[in-house]
Image (cartoon, rainbow, N blue to C red):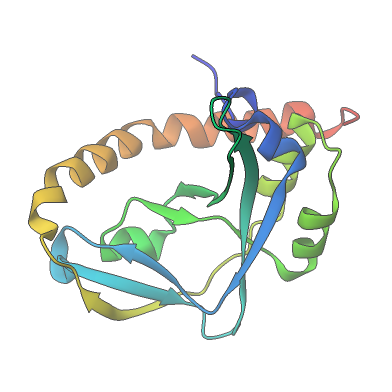
Length: 176
């Protein structure tokens, strides 16, 4: 079975191709459900970079019954950075290299191949550290769901990473 990218899903297509957001942060938070830091909301930052640029998307929809406009955004995520995984979370936000951040928000006419190529080629190589941000309430009730997600993502990780490499090679020389 081949890869399905977010731009190929009807729910995300328009936002992935045309509505890019950039979220500057000094750190990002992830809930931890297993290991030494279980029950903690951990803050991850890069001591070499005071500002991290998270890739996001935004969109708006209109309620056809009321005419009310709903606006929203989402930060893109991917498999866990090795350090985040070691601490105990199964995914990490997509962080863009500083030189690519401006291009992400100014370009509004990429096709799907260009969007994926850009995101995979311009990820920032984080040098993370972490500290406890706060203790989570009622976190035990979410442990099994989190573990199921982590187990599934780990079971497909190698296949998806190889498919991404193959996809990048196959699409590198093609025009956008």
